[in-house]
Image (tube, rainbow, N blue to C red; front, side, top):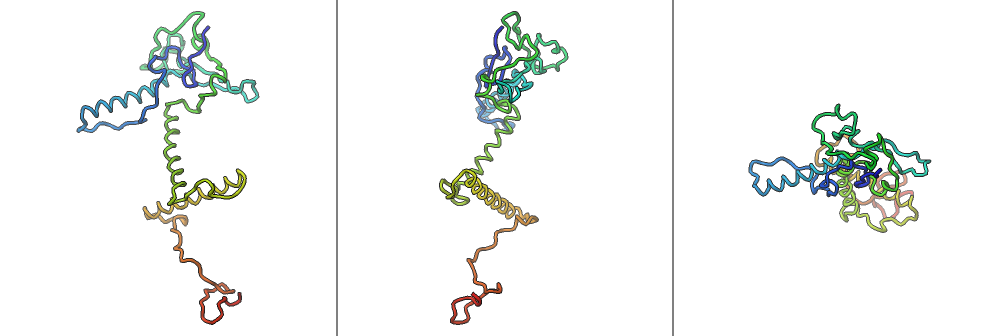
Length: 248
């Protein structure tokens, strides 16, 4: 009996087409419609981008579905049990007894392997894959899936706030911005900087939109330096030869 076909840390159907086994992430994960004034060259570029996205999505059909993981107390806690794509209503496979009830239009597995040398997925309802084969490339979401794309899309926002924190004209965070020892203290100082950045950004947004319903939207008071007050808390001005505030 043969093993399993692993692609990017996930078991796949043995009959996964060759053109889907080694693909790269499309430069764009989505493309808009063509305009009436599109040139022939632009149509070719658009068609190429669409094909890359479709290929990115197509391979997901051949991926096995994770059924359950091993308990943390297991000797191989990273191992996992999978159900083949043909038994998960993602492919039309003649070896699956439920294939006749699957919806039409699914990719068809041509000549599924049989006999004593068929892969385990082709002869068992579920298959356990060792953690050593999965853990290096394992991801929470399948690479290229809509869930993965949504998570990957957050990267632009993360990079944006990092740039805002490092910008000399905003927070100006850099190595040595705080002089405290220990991971907890430096993390606390960083948290204060992030809160200050969030407050600044929300106030800039409120100023642009005119939304001032929340007290946090109020602009920072104008800084005129500092003023002296007397012992009773009243504003003090120099009216005598005594340079000190009364009661000081």
